Length: 192
Image (cartoon, rainbow, N blue to C red; front, side, top):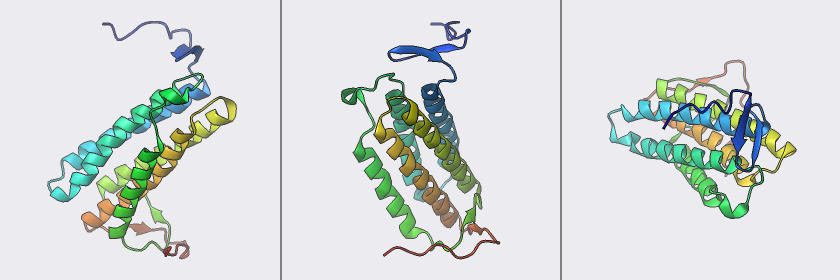
């Protein structure tokens, strides 16, 4: 099988049910999710090199997220989404919420905005967070213009929160403090 087809040389590509421009909002959305998946792969590769068993949860979670990002891209590739064929479902988003709660339980209270970084795995996870936010914006643009499965947007919204919590957890596990934004006020309070 050849990798190249030449069918996209004129600036068009195929989605399920249509032929569209390579800059179509649908292609932008699932293309940004593909980009996010590559960054998640980079973070997963880094975490998998860390020696401690305390990283096993993140290794497994990041791999599962990569599969689920493929599901997101698949759902977005339909020109006319059919709910019976969609792969992204509420239990996936609910699982992210459980993971966030577990990670946050071990994180110190957050009072100020923090800068992305601290440790290298935290910086990689913050990079995933920012690309995830962009993917979410692309999905919002798509949903304003064309039919779009709602659950993908919800999943991406929760996923960016997961990356934030995971980045902070990475710093905790490496005993590296988050770097607070020094000109910011204390704006966060713990919810009860």
